[in-house]
Amino acid sequence: MALKLVQAGDPVLRRRTRELSPEEIRGKAVRELIEQMRETMREAPGVGLAAPQIGESLRLAVIEDRAEYLRNVSADRLALLERKVVPFHVIINPRITLGTAGEARFYEGCLSLTGFLGLVSRALDVRVDALDENAKPIRIDAHGWYARILQHEIDHLNGTLYIDRVYPRTFTTQENYAQFWGDKTVDEAWSALEAERAP
Image 1 (tube, rainbow, N blue to C red):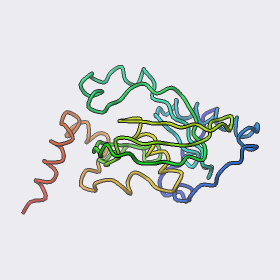
Image 2 (cartoon, helix red, strand yellow; image 1 turned 180 degrees about the vertical axis):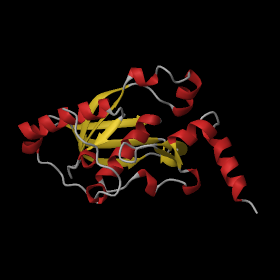
Image 3 (cartoon, rainbow, N blue to C red; image 1 turned 90 degrees about the horizontal axis):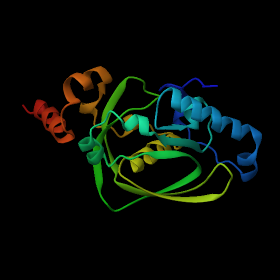
């Protein structure tokens, strides 16, 4: 059963979440929650979902970038984003370390800010140490779009939304993004918006 998505303004999205014990992780309630989160993420659709987004202040997120989401994206854009299929997985009590490969700006959206996008700068590579759905330790080394997804979801677990990191002049509705910015590169959009600021 898909769950209701919490929208910006709800205090649960601004709290630091609590860690789960191995016993809780292996328990029936958390297993059921993970399945509901997977269904909710897929129905939305989205590539990640953190527990606060369904009203649970827990250090738990599910992630999946499905092949069907990439089908209508050009090969050039996939290469630019460094975006590939990411199988479904769970991260619990994650610790993130930003890499040294630099940063990139891309438009991001969020299931808890329905209908909006904005440019956000994120590290190109990260390492995440976490527990999986069986309370087993896992280490993820991610690059490109996958690294961005992990940063976005772990931000949720710390009470941070992408709008806290967005370049304010780039914040837009999805409709306006499609009309004015969707066919431009990030650099072209950035230059155009900065030029508008000039006296």
